[in-house]
Length: 129
Image (cartoon, rainbow, N blue to C red; front, side, top):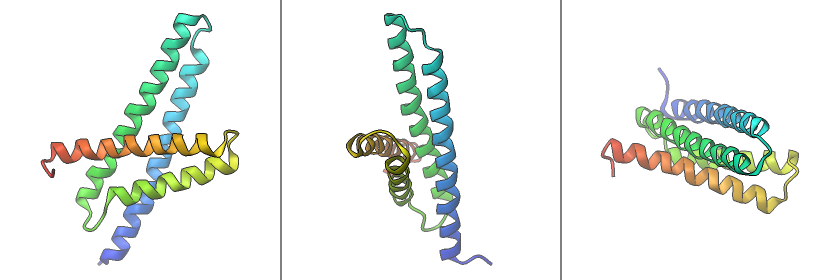
C-alpha cells in the first residue's frame, strides 16, 4: 500500500520529468521551424510567429496535462510542480545557456505563466473555479 507522501513524491518526480521532456520536444519543434523558415523577410516573420505559437500552446498543453494528473492524486498541486520545474529550468539554462540571467529569467517566467494558463483552463473546464 502506497503512503500519501510516497504517492505525492512519485507524482512530482514523474510529472517534472515528463514536463521537462515535453519542453525538450517543444524546443525541438521550434528549432525545426526556425531552421526551415525562409530567410526572405515576410516569410521569416511567419516562421518566428509560428514558433512562438508552438511554444505558447505547448506550454499550455503541458500545464493542462499536469493539472489533470494532479486531480487524480490526493494532495498534489500543479503550482508546486510548475515552480520546481521552472527553477530547475532556470538553473539549467543559466549554467549551460548563452543568454544573460535576465533573459533566462524572463523566458522561464513566460513558461510559468503559460503553464498556469493550462491549469486555469483545466480548472475552468472541470468547474473547480
